[in-house]
Amino acid sequence: MRPFSYTAVREPNAAIASVAGRAGARYLAGGTNLIDLMKDDVERPTLLVDINALPFSAIETTPERVRIGALARMSDVADHPGVIRDLPSVSQALLLSASAQLRNAASIGGNLMQRTRCAYFRDVAVACNKRAPGEGCAAIGGVNRLHAVLGGSDHCICVHASDLAVALVALDATLHAHGPKGERTIPLRDFYALPGATPEHETALTPGELIVAVDVPRSPAAANSHYLKIRDRASYEFALVSVAAGLELAGGVIREARIALGGVAPIPWRARAAEASLQGAAPSPQAFARAAELALQGARGQGLNDFKIALARRAVVRALSTVSA
Image 1 (cartoon, one colour):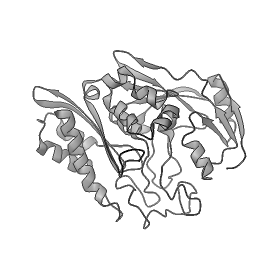
Image 2 (tube, rainbow, N blue to C red):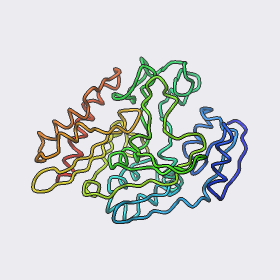
Image 3 (spheres, helix red, strand yellow):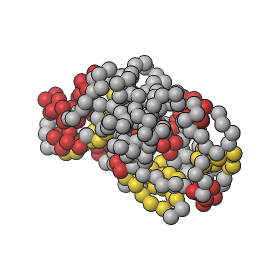
Image 4 (spheres, rainbow, N blue to C red):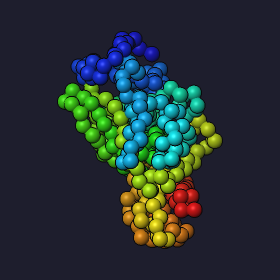
């Protein structure tokens, strides 16, 4: 780990000023991802700005939405009665993330900002366009069993690491950010960037911007939602494939469907065509199989990860069957 400076702040404007004016500065909350990357020499901050004292840890429920502070800990959000009742897929996604110890330390904002767990990204001895633009992507043609089958490019085929982000994208969550130019809201569906030719650009945040809260609209589909995670081992493991699904059912038909996939793309992958195919349809194995085909439309394996395509189709059917029961 390289030398760095440290400061703790108690006021949002002080935090923003500290980071916005220094290219090597990073915000520090739980540190469960950042510190690991510093140990691997992937992240090399010159200044860590500790934001844990900022007033962004509340979890609030109103008739319209659930607001989750960016500094709320994952375990607190997962166990919150309003989240369990109104956003069960969010609670499930959090409980299926990391370990209990990490969930007690990690913040919601940090979870949404975590970087890919691609082994090539984390190994500074091999080529990675995300870590060092222009080097190439060692995963293409390499050991790519865990890599993307949707949304990748010739420059990067990593997968997004966050379970929580998949559930939140399915539920149309919105981020609130503060920065040098003031406050703004960012739909989470627009927050993450596909790699294209610039995989080093990962989110819509600008230098110095700080996530302060996440708003999740309450809806019948959100209240009847489920997060399914398929992985190589039962705990403390990232997803091979995951699905966040929600359905609003009325009169024997589907009025609204929400589907997002994880473990298959560089961003949380919203399956819009699959959702549209279900609207107005009766819940059935045939309707769910058709939606699953549409959800994986355009998927392309890299050899070792070809199995993810069929696995993801089956996972979509299983998740939809769960919320239709």
